[in-house]
Amino acid sequence: MGTLKLYLDDPYLIEFESNVMEYNGKILVLERTAFYPEGGGQPCDTGKILGNREYNVIKVFKEGDIVYHELDSEFFGEKNVRGVIDWEKRYLHMRHHTAIHILSGILFKDYGARITGSQIYTDKARMDINYELGKDKLPEIEAKANDIVKKGLDVVWYYIDRKDFKEDMVRIREDLLPGDEKLRIVEIKGFDLQADGGTHVKNTAEVGTIKISKYENKGKMNKRIYINLL
Ligand SMILES: [Zn+2]
Image 1 (cartoon, rainbow, N blue to C red):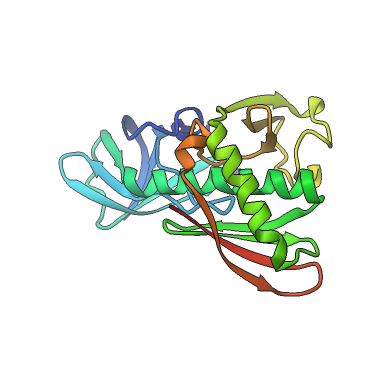
Image 2: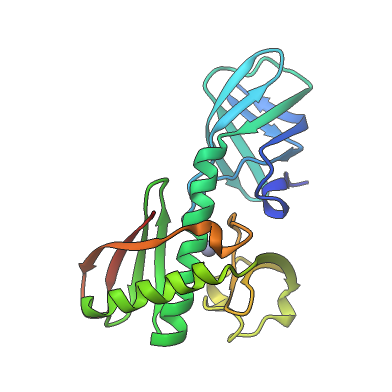
């Protein structure tokens, strides 16, 4: 059975308790976790695992349906532990992730542009855009993104059956989605839908002001932008 992924339902959960499923040296598997494993352009969480000893979680990754926590020292064999994620870092990831969805939504709706890749950091995010996007369009796109922030739209997440998936529901092509029966949808109310496994803020107002800080022309249909949040 896979790890119960607490971050999918409640990205604001900072602390949790869990039984230990298995461990091997510095690698720990829990029954449930709030630690986000690296994936979908969002970096993993770091934080602490508290048992009889205190361990730093230095890396979190997912293989299949199992989440693995890599600790800074060998696990002692506690039966259950408490986990505390580094919230400051996670919240920055959430804000940047929702910012990417806002920009992706605008680029798709208003320009027909698709995002081919993205990477979130704590202090910036990068987006690769499959579109003939001129640098002159950036102020307009930035202003539209900040309108969505200012509107304070709710962000919600839920599951739909794969059979109910419609091509025009989400920006990403179905063949790029993982083969699960259920698709997790992240919706910015009244604005955007995307199949997504990441953690998001619950209202666009939490994102803060979006600044497009860098533009790289990597080819006719291949542009890269970086954003910062103020
Ligand atoms: Zn996403």
